[in-house]
Structure formats: C-alpha cells, structure tokens
Length: 234
Image 1 (cartoon, helix red, strand yellow):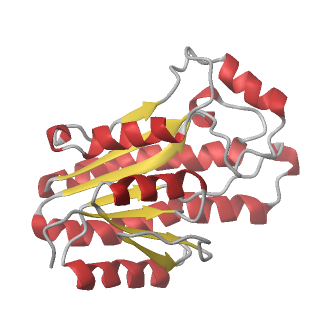
Image 2 (cartoon, one colour):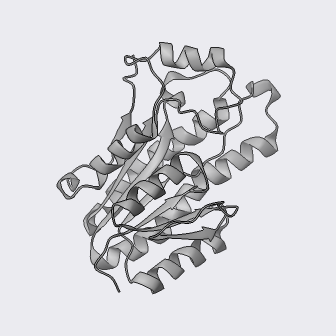
C-alpha cells in the first residue's frame, strides 16, 4: 500500500508516452508503463512492463501486478497506438485489423481492468488518446481515424458506466507532434493538417502534459465524457 498516486501510461518506450512517464515520475507519481519492447532508459519512480495492450492475458497480468504492488491504481493514460497511412483501396485487412486491435480493443482492455481496481477506492482518472485526424477526415488515414473515432465513442460510454464510482473518462486529440508515428507522413500532408488549424503549429509534448494535468487535477472531478482537440479545429 502507498499514499502516493499510481499512474499507468501505455506506449512509454518512446515519443509522447516516454515524455509523460518522465514528466509524472519527476513530479512524484509512481509511474507504471508498458510497451511491446524494452525501453533503452531507466528512471526513478518508474516500472516497465513488456505488454501488448491487444493481448487480454498480458493486460490482466500487468494490472494485477500493479494492484498487488500498490493496492491502488489512480490514473490511466491510454497512449499506445499504431497508425498506417494508406489509401483505403490499398489497405490490407491485416493492417486494418491490427489497428483496431491495438487502438480500440487495447484501449478497452486497459480501461476495463484498471477500472476494476479504481472502483475499490471510488476514484479514478482515465484519459484515452484520440487524434485530430478523425474530425478533419484526413485522406489516407481512414482506418486510423476510424479506430480513434471509436475510442472517443468508447470513452463517452465508459464515462456513463463508471461515473457512479467516481471515475472520470475523457479523450484527448493532439495536433501532429514529430514522433516516429508521423515521420513517414509526407511533409505536404503535415502542412495540410497544420494549415487547417486555428493555431498553425505542430503540437509539443508539453501541450499533451498540460491537457492530461487538466483532466487529472482534483477540481476536474465533474468533467467526464469530454474530448479536447489541440490547435482549434476550424
């Protein structure tokens, strides 16, 4: 048992997930993270799990380990996702299915098992990452956008199902951030996305942490079922 808040962040090996793990570990949270591979770094207040979030048994095992270790799980940030930019006429079924497995089913599995732990203390904060690619209907991202639209709907319904136990569930969609996920996207596509925003710049890791902080803070206990998109979609 511990008096410190415990936070689980998925997809922490690199990119946004790694930054958030560092950010919250430095602020005294007990951070549990996961990815399908080992990170090439270590830090205080952080424990890593080799987990594929689309694997039900692995997710159950991870959450059970966290619960046994600390007796609590306060916050979940579902950041893990995969994307593949491709015209729908050229999208293989295997690629589409894998995106749905990781982005939708994986998010659901982590939410489901984490919520069972949160219910015991009648408190929890769940933040599920979506993308601005969905509402702007970016060509070439049909399946990725569809999977992340499903995450928004999942989150809204979870908010109603879990609200009675003091668990809030919200979604967050960032503008493009220069991570490995978008390095293969043509610059013209990135410029097209940024050009359609009210604030015409790439997102930053700090932008992401700011939104997560807002959803996590105690004063946000009446904010649930919402989605925040960075950049001001026009």
